Length: 71
Image 1 (cartoon, one colour):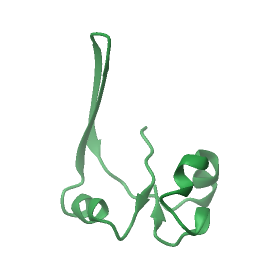
Image 2 (cartoon, rainbow, N blue to C red):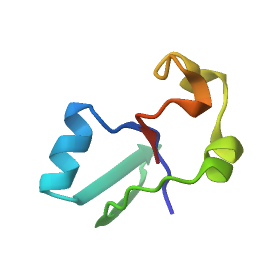
Image 3 (cartoon, rainbow, N blue to C red):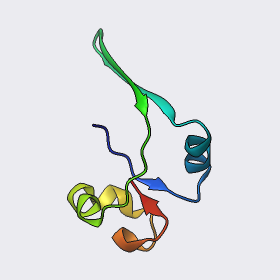
Image 4 (cartoon, rainbow, N blue to C red):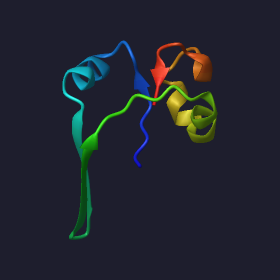
């Protein structure tokens, strides 16, 4: 499972509601991984707490309790 923080009022959330199919790909030194699946929005405060770190603060002014935050 791949978790991402998302602003529910942003363009990405709007696009994903319209077309929830995504593909994530990474590559390094001749190796690659591509994962395709369907997006599911999750509102789970305990999972937010588990995944939260200082790099996310810049995107959500109200912190972990931002009402626009979803996974």
